[in-house]
Length: 250
Image (cartoon, rainbow, N blue to C red; front, side, top):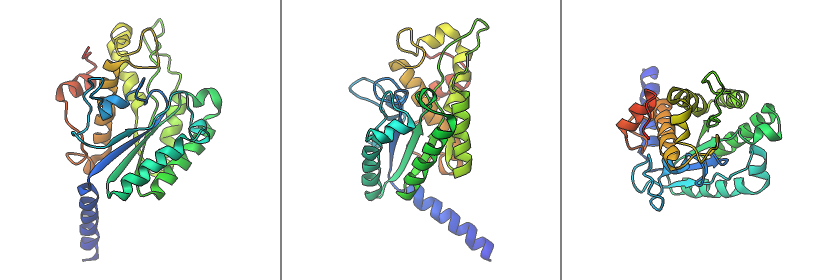
């Protein structure tokens, strides 16, 4: 009887959580930001003509800032701005999902351990605010070697992000692994069409759409019972198929 009540309580609490109107807050560096990252492809941007991955009118706040690490995002005051938005969304009784993606700048400014400590602090603070943190491994640096493989410069930072997720029992989206696999499947020339100019880090509008959808698909897959048909994510079957099968969309 007790077991039945426990299971029933779990499903009741689950239903209550997902029945809340949802909002998203994105935290990270330039590879998530409005100007150069996947954020617009996730949230959408009508002014730029970019269709997002979320249902229309779903609040989505991109607070990512270029050139920041986990340390400078806090020390320069950006974290306070993100926290303010999170508090406001939670106060509106919204299910507030907060993505956190760093690594590109941390690798030049500290150790993987220091990034891990900073991520842990961020995750714990977000949970204290009654929001849902989602750790995201860093978008791949699209730099190919002569063997046609990407020289994986961010692997240690991606692994540290996964470690923090395991230790804090937090959702994890392996964008690093998924984007590396996809870009290698496309090859140097086709994957270049998703990135800005001759760069290997920042994405153009096509890249924003592709990698924003990739994040949405990873989120649906990771949330499982809490995610399938319950997150405010609009399907894009053609793009999702192309991503999962290594087929270029542009």
